[in-house]
Image (cartoon, rainbow, N blue to C red):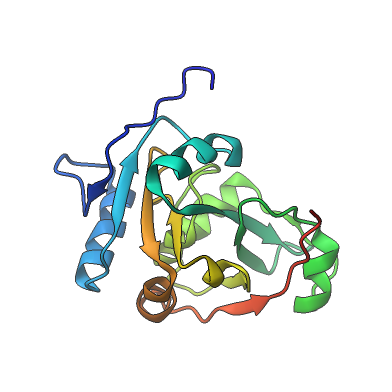
Length: 186
């Protein structure tokens, strides 16, 4: 895959070396919540296609994390959905009563969630202290058991039990998830 590197080792817990502050913040929170996780390090994985190779080493499905907003750019959403599902805005718009959803831009993502495109994950909610971003989770995500998320940098992926994400991390982030049902077009 065009020179994309994936470390074949699966590590338990935080890395021994220092990482960028936004990544360290994720490890600090997970450790404080006593959430166990495994980690795989790799080259920049900004697309689901690159994440497929990471999935095979990590042993968990990696989810898509989409940053969305309404036309007026007054309401923002973080949608967590299975990586292999196709996303169509109309399917979500109806469920959350928001017409004309579109993708939020990189500047808004950085301002609200403290991450850049390709590194977005549920962990960005740690930076949304004003609770301006509504968390949306496709109902199929918890069915996977273990899932993979980038720790606010797309050069590592963490494997977590989705029960820990929903019962420990999400409440600690100060957000309430809204579960949505997105069709599977396969």
